[in-house]
Length: 236
Image (tube, rainbow, N blue to C red; front, side, top):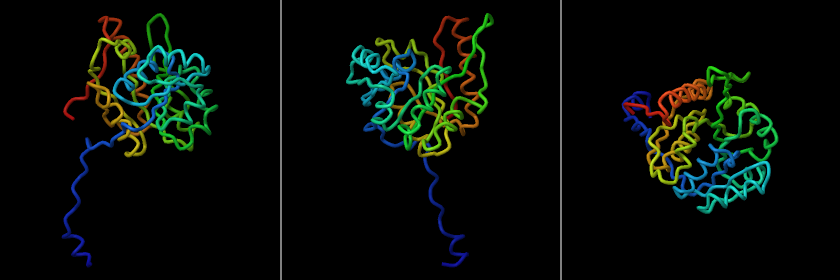
């Protein structure tokens, strides 16, 4: 084929950004699944039909939380949770973030890791963003887990709404960041399993700091208006 033939050949159709994979068969582990955010995510994903394993430093604590939530959720010590899961959501407190991931480097190798940790400080004026040396919690995770596929998502969700059994849908978008489209597509699809929720690609991990930091603003919104604010991205 000549260069002229190449030039005249029809170009493949652009890929539909909303053409997302089927993730219903993936096992999702939630590190920090006994905390409010992790517990809420575990509940919503399991309620949507996902197989979920809660991880904790103490297996008994994870087992208790799993039994309380029901829906087929299992509890395990963090290392076992990581080994048995296809996708691992990191929902641990910021002050234990680095230590937790360092300890699980081998178990998380090859896994899709979704970091939803928000580095925040609190004082008399309210919440404010912290900036890790690596730039963000997600970038810290990527530095600590060189053999894992690290993404960032689920930062702006209200733990109160996630855990409220009377609420059928969570009306919010989930900003998803990562380096590989196949990975961010998986996370977007996972978010979309939860009724009312949508995953929206929002850039590379270098942009994770402002996404994590926005939680400080949402906390201020919630305090002023006594709400459980989320986000919607318009025109997409």
